[in-house]
Length: 137
Image (tube, rainbow, N blue to C red):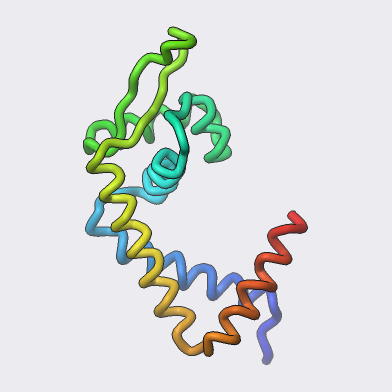
């Protein structure tokens, strides 16, 4: 029986995720923490907790636990927002930026393993097709 497109896409996505989790395990970050760290380190300026929650697609109360863990690990810090004392800003630490670089390497290695059977041309075709689908979200 031939697998359909959705089933194949799901299997490849799970394989990529599994490979990434294996490579990220030594960093001792949960998927939620790694996503939050990615958002924090990619931001051009410190993020308010509510903005971070919005980027992550979670309620602000949920992001507090994630930021607590990142702060405890020395990957992010919190400071009062000078423009609004009721708001808290989240910023990455130097250690957080270094871990983010290691996370990016781990993600790249995991993807490389999955996409290794494809030629450069096939990878570019796949990237273009996925970008097209992403545009129509």
